[in-house]
Length: 371
Image (cartoon, rainbow, N blue to C red; front, side, top):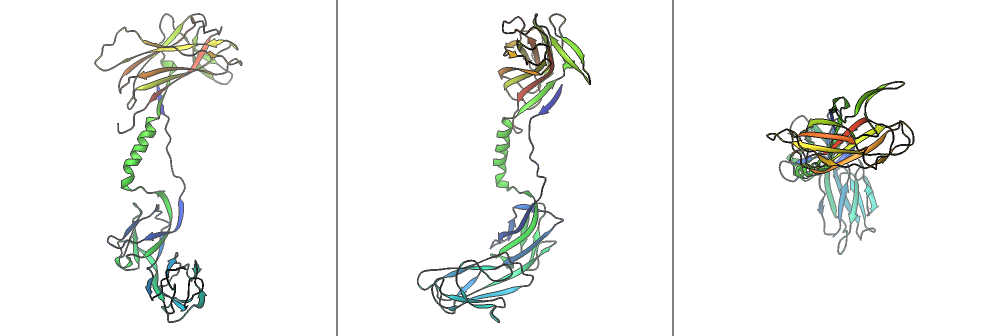
């Protein structure tokens, strides 16, 4: 008897490239953030960060800075209103030297205005006068260096290539950082484990264990048994069980129920062929299940009628008959006796040639792993 399980395993075979994932560095210890993916150690990472913009002035408007910062030098930015007014009318100048020199002046306030090194500024209005002359904002931008251990320098960060955690120096608390990397798998937080376990169990509760009974192991009774034959074909030979059209013939199988099999419906699928090209064939079944400690002697099996199947109009083509035993009570280690017979004495069986069985499959329900 051979065994296989109808399960599917999801395998990630390709890396996911994430460029400059934006992170908000916590304002308190341990200054650690988890990436969306585990970075690839060989590819490594690159990083940058900017501080929040500090405002000085009486206008009600404000700014936000977006990135990522792509510069390779430390920069001190200053944005200053050089013509007062409302959003869209007021103008500003900006500097990446802290105001020592000005990169541009007289730029109209608005949204997503490019500065340099990948940074943009967006102005938002408030109540009253949005922007007064001299209102200004300052912020810093840094290229960050990956370190081999927890950061000892303010511009270092440490990557854990097992968990995907990134730890920053305390001097960068509250900053916005960007880490560029190639990922190799989505991470799961510990808080998600229960939900994932539940989902797996629900999935597995709908799975079936699949057995293919070995026809060589069929028990053929001395009276009323099918004939086991070897069929020689042009390019191969196969073993089959031949069931007569005129007399009820049967075979038996005996096997232990494996682990994690649940109680429920058990389905027998029989593949057979025939030289006939018309008529119906009826396969039925019976079973007996015995547990450890119970007697094992002559007892009646529980019958289950199948459904008559019309033979394919092409001689030698495969046909499938199905027998379903409903609500069987099964446990690990039970011994199952299975009888399969062609119900040739039934008026529903009208096919006038042998039915040659070449495969018998059993589908049984499976328990979740942690049940």
